Length: 315
Image (cartoon, rainbow, N blue to C red):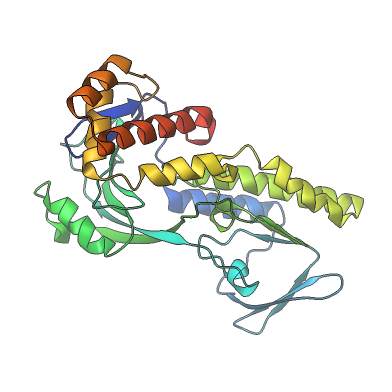
C-alpha cells in the first residue's frame, strides 16, 4: 500500500504517504505458531486457562480440561480481554470492532488504507481496505457497532447482506499506560495495551513488546535472577502506548464532534499529515471564531505531533 488517507464528514482529508502492508492475519498468525513449534515451543489448543495461582517458585495454571501447567515466569499475550489480567484481578477498558468482508469493490481506492472519522463512531472510526481479493469495511467504537457499520455501508449503496464473512474483535482503550510488569509476569501485545493510540493498530506493538518480553525472560532464566523482569518497563518505554500525552490527545481526537472534525479537514485541506497550513488555520479561525473550531485545530495539531513523534510504530 502507498499509505493512509483519513476522511472527515465534509470529505476533507489528510494522508500519510508511507509504504505499508495489508496482511492476512489468519495466515500470519499460523506462520507465527508454526515458527514457534519448529523452535521447540509446545502449542496447546482447546486449553483455556480458568485458574491461576502463585506458589513460592512458580506459577500454576489450570485449564478447563483439568490440565495443570507450571512455569517460573509468565508472559500474558492473550489479547485485550486478557484472561490472565482478569484472573489476577485487573480490569481494563476496551472498545469493540466489527468488520464485514466483501468481494472486491473496485470503486474504492486500492493503493491506500481509508479511514473515516465521524462523531457517530466515538472512541473510534470506520475504515475501508481494498485487499485485492476482497474489500473489508469495518467500524471501531462503542455502542451498537453492528448497526453503525450497516448504516455506514448503506451510505455507499452497498447491501450488507452481500458480505462474505464477519469478524469481531476487542481493542484496548485506556487513557493511561496499562501495567505491564507484575512479580513474575509480563504483559505484551493487546494484553499490555500495546496498540498505537491514534489508529489502534496492534501488530507492530505486539511484535515489539513480544520480542522484548521474550528477551527479558530469557535473560532472567540464564542469570537466574527474577529482578531482571523489572527492566521490561524501560525497554518498552519508547512505544506510544506508554506515553500519557499520546494517549490523552489521541483519545481527545477520537472524541471530536463533526464541527471540530470538519474544521481539521478544511484547515489541512488534502495535505500531507505533517504539514502545518498556518495561513489556512488563521483564515478559518477568523471566519469561524468559536470553541469547536479552535478545539478541533488544537487537538488535531497535537495528534499530528503525536503521529510524527512515534511514526515508526505506526507502519
